Image (cartoon, rainbow, N blue to C red; front, side, top):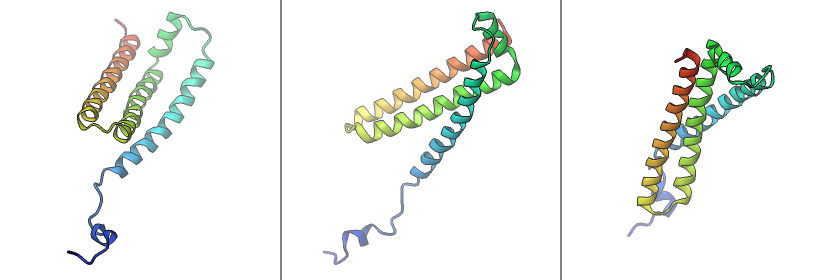
Length: 126
C-alpha cells in the first residue's frame, strides 16, 4: 500500500514522446498546404483555358511540376496524419484500429505515388 496520491505516482514518468512530433507535422504541413493551395488556386484562376493541351503545357514547366509534386506529397502526408488521429481517437477495437492504420498508410502512399507518377508522366511526356 502506498501513501502517494495518484498524481504523485505518475509524475516523473514522462510521456510517450510521440505527440509533439505529430503535432508539429500537422502544423508545418498545414502551413505548407495553405501556401501551396494559394499558389494552385492562383495558377488555375489565371490559366487561359482548361484544355488538355494547356494543362500539359502548365505541368510541363519545371516550377509548376515541382510545386504540384510538393502539393501532392504534402497533401497526402497531412491527410494521413489527420486520419491517424481520428482512428486512434474513435476506433476502440485494437485489431480494427491496427488494420485501419495500416490500410490508411498504404492508401495514402498509393495515392501519393499515383499523383507523382501522373505529374511526372505529363511533365516529362510519354
